[in-house]
Each structure stands twice: as structure tokens, then as C-alpha cells.
Image (tube, rainbow, N blue to C red; front, side):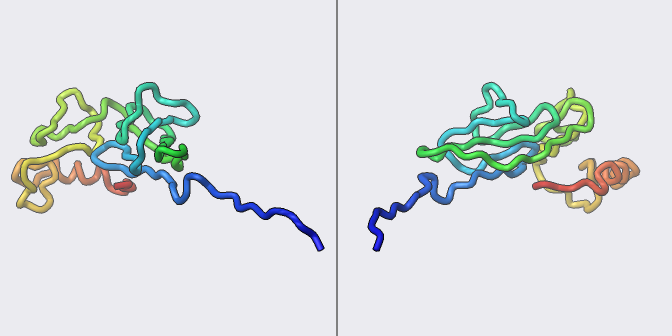
Length: 142
């Protein structure tokens, strides 16, 4: 007969697995009490909010605290094809005249009542076709 003590090892984090989603051209962490964003293995200085908008391509992750422990999310790839990111639609409420690459953050007063009017000018033209072809085959992460 053997005697001894049986101990249970308990994870202080419990079921706490941070994740990242994409919303309006920004990365959004699952909820926590503190955040630290990373591009690859490098912590991004000053990036300590729930949301982060990358300014360069890379593999982004976030470390999140739930008040008791800190865990890391998985990595999410962020690609910028060139130019200054922002809203490139002149009819959008957050149009950025300096932007040369649309980052998906555009917002509009009302939805167009004209299906296919991708530039929101009220008519369907070759410009709408070009807008469609520019994103055709793109994988949407939202």
C-alpha cells in the first residue's frame, strides 16, 4: 500500500483564450483588462487598446490580461498592397484625401438604393466595374 498526497493543478486563467477579429479596417481583440499588440515578435510601442489599426504589413497578435493572467492570441496576417491606407471613397463620411489604398473603413450616410453602385455616385458605370474587379477574389476577414 502506498500513501501520499494527490494535488490538482489548476490553470488560473480558466477558459480565457484571446482572439482577434477585423472590423472597419482595424484589428479588434476579444475583451480583457489590458492589451499589448505585437507584429511578429516585436511589441508595438503605445499599442495598448482593444483596437489596433496596422500601418504596415505583418503577422499581428495581441497579449490580453483578464486581471489574473496574460495570454496571447493567435497571429493574423495583415497585408497592405501599397499606398497610404484609409477611406478612398469621396462620398464616404470619413473620406481621406491622402489615402491611396482603401482599407475597408469607409462609412456612408445611407446605403445606396442602386445595387451595383460601388462608388456611391448614384449611377452604375465602368468605374463601378473597376472597383469590383479590384477586389474580385479577395478573401474577406470580417
